[in-house]
Length: 143
Image (cartoon, rainbow, N blue to C red; front, side):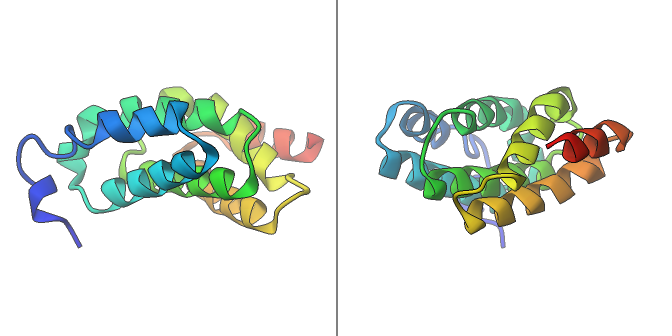
């Protein structure tokens, strides 16, 4: 269900700076909470209102996922990325190589079943975005 306040201008714009700030510079708990909040914003905002912000949200999510954080932070970020991929596939095409590497690493994460599960779900969403799955399968086989 959509949140009425996110359906009209300015949409999610006022929520993004504090959430992205917490994601980029907060403690591990703050990063996890910010990622979960971003997932909810993506899920409850109409695609038309979120389209202009999709790249602004995707970049920090990918960047933070490559850092060394605990499993809860990684799982929350992967869930947010999956929601974003489902809502804005076309806008995220420039991020395909980074998303692919990120998801493959998550699938191979030996420390957390939750990260692997969210990685698999994100990888499934990513496969739907990718025009060719050959590179994805090659990277999975090499991992």
